[in-house]
Image (cartoon, rainbow over all chains, first blue to last red; front, side):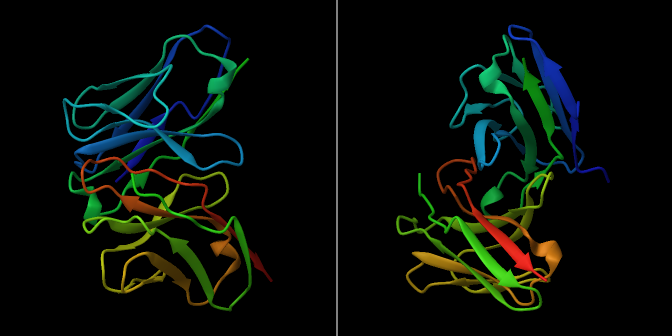
Length: 114
Length: 110
């Protein structure tokens, strides 16, 4: 049981380049989330998907797009990377009624934009 | 969205109990209180959650005030491995997002 898997683990981009961060979960969870964590800071919610086919903005959605490809996969795309997007990105998943359950997190993708 | 307030940092000695406080004065009746922790260079991991009653599990205990405006995470015997940032989060009753604050950085001294 792999849980939540993120790829890649590390990435360096040049300003203006695009890339997609991949996230997959094998726990049959309905809800998935993307967070970013800047050095010394807490996590901030970028986008989330309450269920397959739906996505919603979180606290800091600007500069990002997401796709809930199917129930297992939730990708995060940076269309034109900027140095301000240098951060560690975490994907998480939980069951639909997440109020009364726990979320599981991936190990993170460390992104540097130069 | 309901907010939480936690101290920035706390220290504890190894093998002593630790009480991590969280204030959430604007909590709504349907909000659950969740605690997560983040070890260095790792993703957050679930610790415990509750609604109204105190909760215990293998990792910790959660004490919830009668008015639900505050809660305390209790680690009964801190170990060096418990050194982490601890986040207190309220799950929104109206939607499905989950928002973290800055958390409390716990240092455990040998």
